[in-house]
Image 1: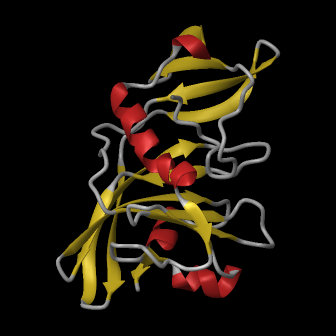
Image 2: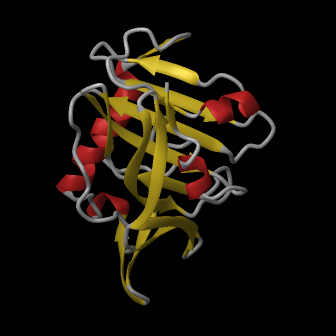
Length: 215
C-alpha cells in the first residue's frame, strides 16, 4: 500500500500511474515506475493502521463510544465549526476539521485505544512535478522535526514531545501536508495513541499542535 500524500483531502488513493524521481541528498539516482518503488514494511504497517479508521469507522454526530482520552482542537471548532467525526467499534476515532473559507486548511486527529506502529525513521517527503512531460513525484529523504507541546488535560497540562515530518509539499489541489508520528497521551490511567495530520498554507505545525486539548 502506498502511503498516499493526498490523503489529507482525498480518502482514496489516486488510480493513475505516476513516476517517482528518487533522490539521495541532492544527487538524482534513478527514474522508477511507481509499481517498482514500494514502501518499507514499516511505513505500510503504520499507514494502514492510521487510515484504517477511515474505512472501519462510522460517521456520527458525537464521540459516543470512544474509549480513550478525547484529544481534540476546540479552538479550531470555534473558528471553523464542528469536525466531521468517525468512531470505530473498538473505540478509536477520527476528528476532521476544515476551514470553510480556505481550501488548504485541514487538521485531522486520529485516536486509537490499542498501540499502533510507530515509525523509526521519517518517510520521504513527496513533491508532485512534471517529469518528462508526465506527472511525477520527487521523493527526498528527511529528518524528524520535534515539537514540545503542553497538552491541556482535565488533570493539568501534559508535556509531550511530538515528532513530525513533511509528508508532501503540496501543489495543485492540495496544500503542504505534515504528519506526526504516533504519540501517546495518558489521562486517569487510560492511554490513547494518536496521529495528527496538518494541511496548511497559513499556520505553522507548532501552532496547530499547541491547539490540542483533551476534553
